[in-house]
Length: 278
Ligand SMILES: NC(=O)c1ccc[n+]([C@@H]2O[C@H](COP(=O)([O-])OP(=O)(O)OC[C@H]3O[C@@H](n4cnc5c(N)ncnc54)[C@H](OP(=O)(O)O)[C@@H]3O)[C@@H](O)[C@H]2O)c1
Image (cartoon, rainbow, N blue to C red; front, side):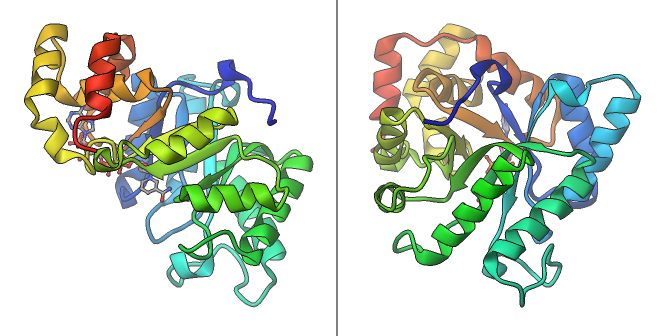
């Protein structure tokens, strides 16, 4: 069982994907607005990790936060998830690629360790492969060397997780998945996580569930709470034990997303949302 200190994992993560040259300014804004968890990846195709590092440096200089206040999460991405801007030698073996990618992340982020290091996605959609086993073992070595506190996997099915467990691999501290309401909000994977005390990180809670945001059930709860439908979805995510991500580019939405942490849904409301469309 991974030693997970709940105090050091903030209740909301700010996601830095798809922000390109706005990455630094938006990450800095998110820190000013109160986010303390930052999710990035050493995958230049979708993330600008160096821009996150610039935001951290200017936030430290401006006394907005210190490194100790933050939960920094980044990812190792296989060659097939990258474009030509690789953080490792593609001819090197996978273990070396993990070590090179981690070294590059630490340089981008200006730190000697991250708080969570995540396998961005397994090598195959069909199941946990020997490639994943090699990468995971290399990630465990990075953790043992102190370059990350915790480890996670992303974009995984129940099958990936079950097969990973069957190999005797160390249990991840985190699973990070796109959370579709039509799949019972990833019910099977969440149940797997709950049984093993893995923290489930949910992304695309709004963008993958646009029909939910229009639903009258959500509108009714939002009306009762004086909240927005988006806030109700985030409050629901927290109520069922998820650690939600938001990638908003809007300061008001940043504040609203954080304010959703104070909203309380009734048990009946949680159950109704859980089975709303799947
Ligand atoms: N592991 C993976 O493969 C993977 C994949 C995708 C994403 N992620 C991570 O997850 C993060 C978040 O991605 P995402 O897909 O959840 O979100 P996203 O693509 O960043 O989009 C969030 C959307 O929700 C809107 N929004 C946020 N708060 C709102 C509010 N209070 N009211 C109304 N609209 C609101 C945003 O619009 P505004 O900008 O106008 O607020 C935006 O359109 C990424 O940045 C990345 O770090 C990981």
